[in-house]
Every structure is written in structure tokens, then in C-alpha cells.
Length: 116
Image 1 (cartoon, rainbow, N blue to C red):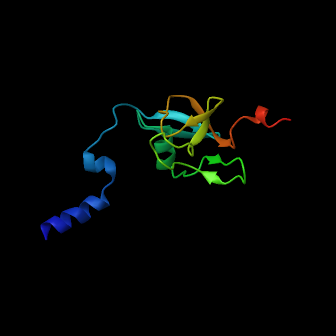
Image 2: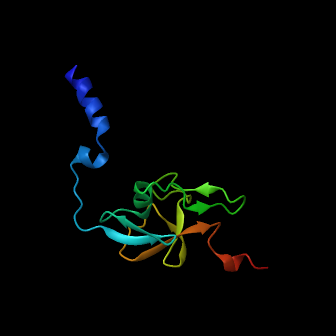
């Protein structure tokens, strides 16, 4: 009985509380599509966007469908963003850095490739 209660209590807590993790420094400021955001020290852009409730930050080349994190370990390319003007960065692998300018990536992120 006590074991069952403990499991329910654990579900009510978030991952940080379960592992007793504490940030090792001040929040990391960055912007996403012009909005000020913060990340925990060492947190990836994908994790910071998820924490802010943003689940999609790329659109597909064909159809403009929304995409976000799929695998979360850098094997797929669904979480691509443009970071500091450089397209094609996998948000699940890139740690947030102070002052990063992150923007939604549309298609492949290279408008110069679309011109005939």
C-alpha cells in the first residue's frame, strides 16, 4: 500500500524534483522568433522550448507542416532551427548560449536554394 502511494506522489513531482537536480548557474537568456526566453544552464534549445510550451519550431518543405522534436537524440532532423542566422541546427543537440537568436526554420532554411 505504501509503495502504491509513493508512486502516485512521485508522478505529481517533475523530473527535477525526482532527481533532486538544481541549476548550476543563472538562467541563459536567448530569443525565439523575437520573444525573450530563458534556458537552464546546459539545457538544449529543444528542452528550453518545450519547457516554455512551444512544441513546434520548423515547417516542412512540402506542405508547410509543423515539426518539433521527434527522436530527441540527434538521429532525425525534425527539430531543425536557425540559430544566429545558421539554418539546419538540431535543437535537441544545441545547448542554449547567452544571446542566441533562434528562429523558426521554414523548409530547409535556405531561401537562396529556392531561386531558379
